[in-house]
Image (cartoon, rainbow, N blue to C red; front, side):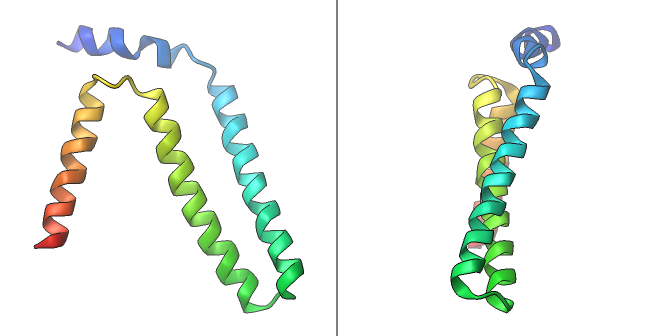
Length: 95
């Protein structure tokens, strides 16, 4: 079983970590530019801090989740664990 998981993850381990880091850096830079552009439009102050924080948090969470979703093989134990854990969290939250 462990060997099967290792075989499934070999392509990911061999992928370009540098390329992934560049994509994440580019995404963060795009978020910072968007927040900066809105700051210029709104005139700064508290609005800039609130918007920039919210945007960065939402972008980082969404982009990170999407990136991981594309890197992890669909039929892996990690995906099953993420799915089951998310379901348990939703059930606990609704209770």
